[in-house]
Length: 125
Image (cartoon, rainbow, N blue to C red; front, side, top):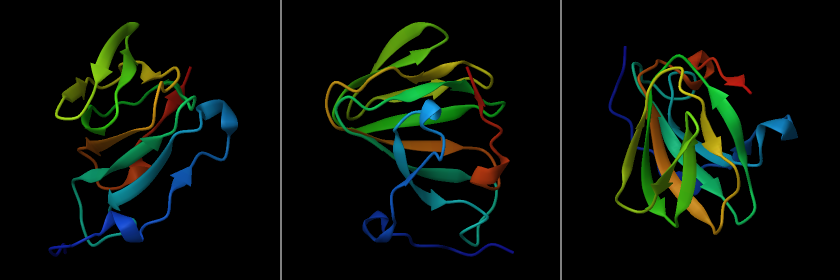
């Protein structure tokens, strides 16, 4: 059973990949069935400092990015799409995407239609 949940991102730690080949992107998981009393939706905030990367990858689930701070080019199937505050990017399932390098500090909201972050089957290029 799920319940309304209130999460303050200021109280959450930054998380990153154990494998540096996946990039230096960090994130804060806001909603995920393995950490909150929720289902059917995973979302969080991704963070990158200048020069950090998010290796090209894909996953079966479509994803949505919504720019919060800073600007960065997100590669989606080989095409650069500028993400900036107020801009939403829909990333189709199985599309190869990532950030080759951040030009400045950047933050974006991301979401998947899945029960838990652990359900997202990442495949890195």
